[in-house]
Image (cartoon, rainbow, N blue to C red; front, top):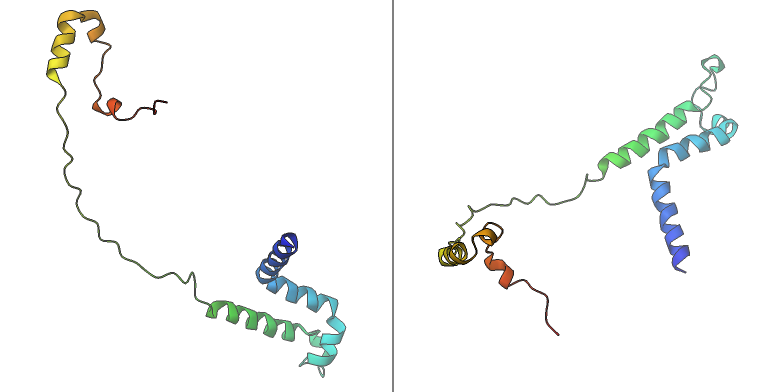
Length: 125
């Protein structure tokens, strides 16, 4: 059932997208019938209209129908931005760095203190 519904919706979208091309295909398939029924220039065969006037009217009608539909249909929204507030930056812990330099001068260059590391850790089981 869902495949049928998806296929049906796909066909509807394709028909809407290729509506002008379908009009031209219909004209090509039924050219003699359209010439006999709808051609305005039957009395002047040397113009070789062959129903192109009817095709032109149909294409113009389809274009007018497309242009009447609203483009996008989205409401215009204006966003007012506020200036960002200054973010408080905690000073680095100078006591920790001083102690690290005293007791382990070689490791002190590789050590970086991050206050966020104490907050973001995986839960313990």
